Length: 128
Image 1 (spheres, helix red, strand yellow):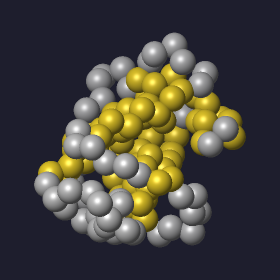
Image 2: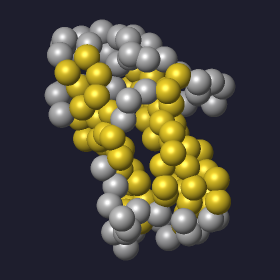
Image 3: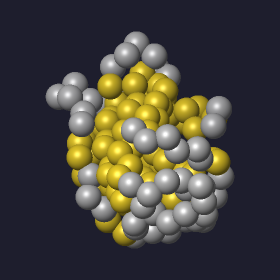
């Protein structure tokens, strides 16, 4: 089963994706679990490499939790099977551009399988 990640930014925000596997996730942040009872990942923690986000700096956000069943995690075209049990995955990895306007940003990250079953939904809010 393949799932897609859909990112929706409430305010216009252009971002540049940057791959970096050496990020240390140790800053917990406030978040809302917008998943339904049918989600396949029970989210326990959301962490970022820095908080709050800053302009011109890479923001990487990960979720940790427990997968309730097996599914395929598609990361940049690399399909990785997941199995029931502990799981940690990157859900956002981008640089906030210098031209981003001041104000409140609401980031919704939703992941669904190709058959439309929800894997996860996380809402993160910050002020720039």
